[in-house]
Amino acid sequence: MTWRLLPYQTYNAFYNMAIDEAVFRETIKNKQPPTLRFFGWRPSAVSIGYFQELKNEINVERCRSTGVDIVRRITGGKAVYHQAEITYALTAGNSDGLFPDDLVRTYEIISVCLARGLSELGIHAHLAKAGALHKRPDRSPCCFAEPSGNELLVAGRKICGSAQMRTHGGFLQHGSLLMSFDPVETAALIRSP
Image (cartoon, rainbow, N blue to C red):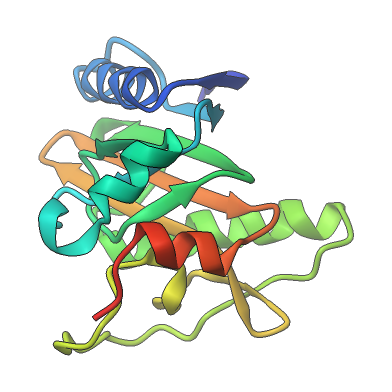
């Protein structure tokens, strides 16, 4: 099976999401092979999951006043402040037969691959235990506030957050691998309950 790798480049939030959606649409039509893209964000941005409510979960005024873009992903998940990180987008069609038609199992496979790659760099990450997160009214809308099953941890802290979008033709998974984390600025941009 041939893969396509789109090497790291930096774009604004809107262009990044447009690229990912276009690559996803072409991949599930079998017009492109499974694709892995690495990218950064300039300027910094907050991306929100497909099902999140902007007005309740993001401090829009703070984002505007500090020049932080806001964009909605087509993937689910929680809000991410994209500043010092490497983001990836992985798309594959169901007909490729590379991944199961199961969200949790796909997360696990991708996370294991990421952990192996980090291990090659001397970073020893492990997967958070799988288990259903119960929706609580006090859950933070911030992706890095708590790990979900199969997400990467180093020294007990979440270092990679991921979200997926699936259709009958395939999936797109976004992931953010933190290089550093500013909890104060993140809390100023993404509201807490």
